[in-house]
Amino acid sequence: MITGKFPALRLRRNRKTDWSRRLIEENNLTPNDFILPIFLIDGKNKKQSIKSMPGVYRYTIDKLNNIVDRAIKKGIPMIALFPYTEKRKKNDLGTEALNENNLVCRALQRIKNKYKNEIGIMCDVALDPYTSHGHDGLLQNKYVLNDETIKILLDQSLLQAQMGCDVLAPSDMMDGRIGEIRKYLDKHNFKMTQILSYAVKYASSFYGPFRDAVGSKNLLKGNKKNYQMDYRNSDEALREVALDIKEGADMVMVKPGLPYLDIIKKVKENFKIPVMAYQVSGEYSLLENGIKNDLTDRNIILESLISFKRAGANAIVSYYADRLDQIIK
Image: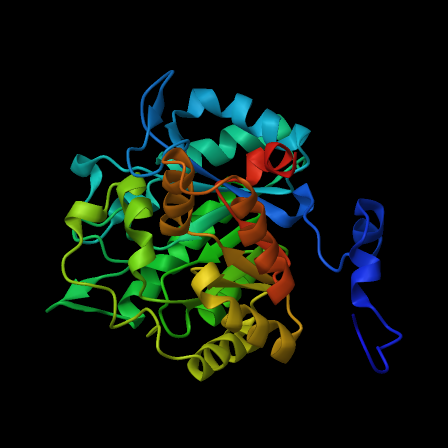
């Protein structure tokens, strides 16, 4: 029996019923909160499984209509294209990135011709899917060159904009590339093409399955620590974001997501800019393999996705994006 003066306010009153919990909830998920990644592969009529990412596939361009139709029907505002480049098309300079007939360019043209502006398209600006050494830029003596890499990224950005890309997403982590890309786009009359900067991209161990998906995992020479961020640092993330905003970024990305919720929160609170979070391949694979092995239930997916919103993310790049309705159920 409770004795003495008990508080008049019982917070559990608001949690008593489902309708009351829904009435006062602070965060929720809708399709508007998601970007759907799509992996591309050469050929025809192929849907290729990715061993390290159960439930995720690579698609040939002729299979894209079904994927995009489903995304539009589900209300997803944007898709992100990532190519699996055949080894024979890779070289030290990543020249396939500038080929107007590469996978991304052909996919852009097909989607834009059919869907116009029904859905946004985001494209990665980086060389790692195209280089024989697996790095995001030009490699010299085991070091990725900054300014020389940017010169190639400018042409890659312009090409993707010309082919119909709505949102360019430089993920390379070269210093100064946002400002140079913005000026280059404006010079060529692509003033309204948006830039989503991977301003905070950590040198993370969570990227393995993605590198498998785009075919760079077994090619990577060394690591990416001399240009991607040190995961022990957080103040540095704010400096990176401040620089990219000054250079013209419209939105910024924090990658990976779940291990860096504190960074998402800091960026949002300090800059009030649209912040995207990437629930990366390693996070996805841990969740999906856990479910497959009966270690968790699907509610853990919803809980992890809500955490991004609670931290301040405007949207989430997630391989679960087109399964949100099933997850919520």
